[in-house]
Length: 335
Image (cartoon, rainbow, N blue to C red; front, side, top):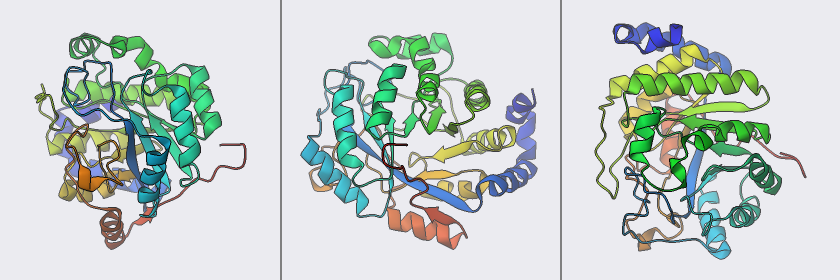
């Protein structure tokens, strides 16, 4: 009920005191640090018909899948920036991006990065364990929208239509012993207060039940995409701030990630309000890091903050924060 109160319309009048307390709690638990990472897209083949995504099977976009040689080129390009944490993504196509292919990619990537997270289609506990054995230590998976009826409308066809299988995926990742699990709702698909509330409930459940897993939350807003989908609900900057503050006050130890979906100026201001992790030097295209000059324009969505890793690093240092390039080192045979 306290979390609901923090998300309520009346709480909007108290954002300043909420921000001051959120800042104190974040520094208490995380220090003046921001972990940096970047996404890497392995494939954009997809069998789903999600109405809000550029990778939908209904869209005539250029489809790509990286070879292992191209994966290494992409890894070298990213590693040259100093980043040691990476998030690998695929469309939902077990045919083009089977678990075996992802595991092979991880074998290449772990020569360049100390932490490899996945944002792919939901898997069984056994398949998550298989990827952990290959070198994966983190899982990101968004429910997209927690309202079940809205979920059905936005996912008319494809395996992603299975609401419950996706909802339970973060827990299967915890059961498989992922070091970190990151969840979230895609803001704009439903009423933001409801979605933020259920995201917080979901994260709180996981954090309380799986004490050895680091639980994090992302707060992505809809961005322009190939299908031209228009958000059904308006989520303003002020709304986004209220969500961040409410999450921090409700869950002082939860990680909070802000992506390059948000513009540079806003991301700068959010640093001191509870954020613990930021993406930098981002491309949402397959092979978009090493092959920028041959861009096909087929990213998953348009990014807003175009800054490179050096620029984000300089901004954080100027604000008195330590940009963290590595906070995890797996031992031989262990994660």
